[in-house]
Length: 130
Image (tube, rainbow, N blue to C red; front, side, top):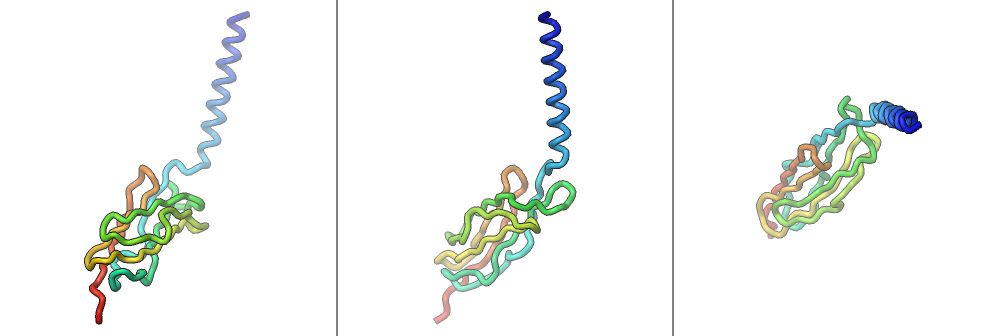
């Protein structure tokens, strides 16, 4: 009697593993983050850059991944972001904008989605003209 219960348990466990394996094949196995636009801009210190930073998240087949959370972080220059986290849209795009820091020079913003390679954007704050 005990052997039958154990066998039934193993059969059930095997069936669950097979079903779980089948279900996961339609979900993205990994996501790829790429920079689309916004890097290389310059503006007066303390001002909002004219164009946002844009990234795209794709699955292993190159299809856009909507609803994926992208985290943004200022890593140099002391600027302020309009969003520190933003979801991707139907095209897999996520955006944020940067108000440059108060000092002239390079500002950097990093976009990340976890374990994947980060994308780094740069912008230059120029001295305010009088």
